[in-house]
Structures are given as structure tokens and as C-alpha cells.
Length: 265
Image (cartoon, rainbow, N blue to C red; front, side, top):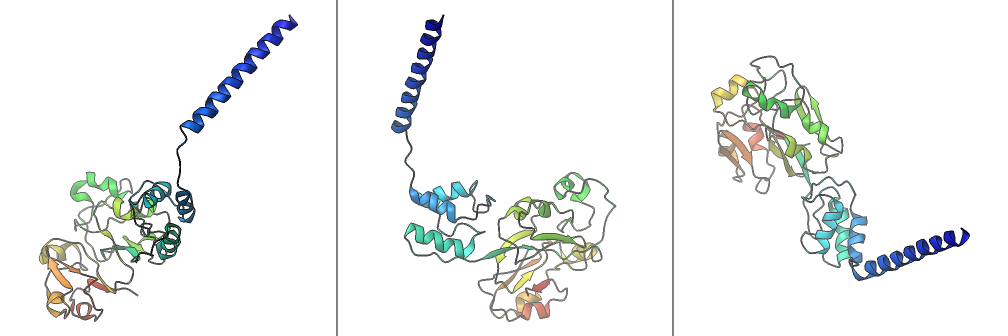
């Protein structure tokens, strides 16, 4: 009886030893060599895994940077500070980066906009694509105000005030989550240093825009005519400013009859 137990114990022990040796040998043979720089880059990244860089997470971005598939300044959350650390790890010259922040191109507050009906359904902007005209507001291009962007922002940088989403540029990390979730495509990433921005996205003709919102661009072209740098263009009845050409003179803001062009503080 005792000898049987000892034999069974020996067999189990020997089997475990063989399996251990086999796994150890397999681990050595099939070991995937990792670049130490990849771990260092991952350590330098903020670890938000927000996807703002275009990769699934920080580990994927680290692998892409080390593999040469992504620049050292690819992380929008880390900004220049992180880009500098990564450039040092990679032993390359630091790449210049432009800080960007989200901007909501709409000023259609509850007081300034008209409504076709009263909506009492689910308070999620994405759900309003299933209701008439894409929402209760007469303007088909304006902010719906139910905060889908607020819910996805991991940095508490965007809030809805008086029916319109507003971004805190100091808190924004340009992760693009709000940009991607907005069903009206009102949010875009703009240079942090942009001085003047067009706070409207309407593509309707002036008379139609005026019926829906008193703060909408009417496409009159006065801003374009008065811009000495040629930075303003009106396309599809809505003005747009090229931040690379804008000199910050403020002529467009001063001449805009609807005060659609706003100055960043």
C-alpha cells in the first residue's frame, strides 16, 4: 500500500519535472525579444490609453514609435514634455509639435435658437439621429446639448452650458473622443494658439440660418473681404479661418455682423 503511494508520488513528481523542463525549454526557444526602448517609451507615456494617437493604447503606440511607425511626438496628451523624453530615449532630435485643443463650432444657446418641437426622449446626442430632423432644434447643424461629448471625455474638459457644449482649453488633451462621438461633427481640433475661430457650422443659406439661430453664420463674406492676410474664406455659406495664415488683426471679428467669429482668450 505504502509502496503504491510512493510510486504514484514519484510518477507525478517526475511528470511535473518533465513538463517544467519542457516549458522552460520552450520559453527559451520561442522567447520574443523585446527592445528595452519600448518599455522605456511606455513608461514615459501618460498611460491614459485614450486612443488619441490613433493606436489602441499606449503600449501599441510605444511599439510603433520604437518600430519607426509613429513619430516621437505622436501622443497628444503628453504634449511637448513627453515628446522630449521619448526623443531622448530614441536618441533622435525632438520633433516640433503643435498643441491642439477641441473647439465646438456653435453658439446656438437655448435663447438664440428656435425649436420645431419639444424632445423628451433619451438624452444622448447620438440617439437623436433617429428622430425627425435629427433633433428638436430648427438648425440642423447646431449642438444638440445632451452631452455625449461630456460623457466620453476622460479629462473633464467639456461641459454643456445653456444647451451648447463648451471646451476648457486648459483641461483638454486633444484625445479626439469628443470629436469622434459628436453626430453633428461640430467639434474639431484647432491649434491652441489660434486667436480667432468661427463658432458656427451651418451650411444653410443666410435666410434659412436666421430662422433657426440668431447666432449663425449667414455667409455674407464681409469677413473674407476685410481680411488683409487672406486667411478667411466662405464656403458652403459658412466662414472658415486658416490659423496658419491668420495674423490676429481682429478685422474679421470686428466686421462680422452676426458676431459668429470669436476671439480666444
